[in-house]
Image 1: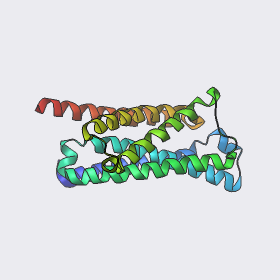
Image 2: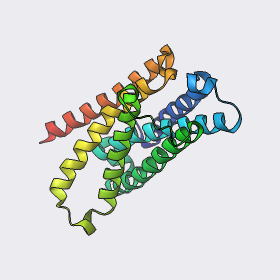
Image 3: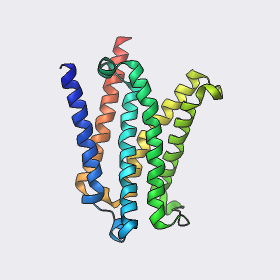
Image 4: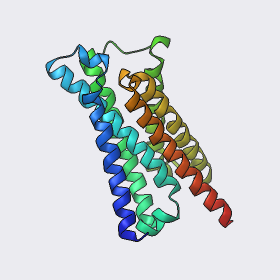
Length: 207
């Protein structure tokens, strides 16, 4: 496949996934949206959109981290590393926006705390993980972190975030009780995992 076709394919898949994800809060409304009107409903829906965008960029972030031969040939290692750093900041901004816009319509004082709200607690853990990853990446040299140890810890947090994002999305919103969004989530996450496995296997064979 030529470089142009590769780029077209990657961009098309990305646009398709983003378009499909952003339609979910409109087509498959959660119960929390049913009881909201006016600005509260708009803010809550915008918050859900920000969360879904953050999740998509998190999946992209994992792929940018492992790169693989195809991406390296298309964009170059330096560009991929640069995008990885910038994308991490965008993920954190979207995650914070998601939390803020979801909580504002409910009232900041009504924080979902307790075992009853375990999916929200998973989301809070994800936010902490993302914050830790982004801040440690941006300030690693200033903080004097050993690169090898930091990279191993960073990679571990990345895979943990990948696991948690699926759990959080699947159980935090009634939107994913519908067959189409649930199936789309499974297919998207499974596709990323398969790509990761193929990249790792190809790298192992080259050793």
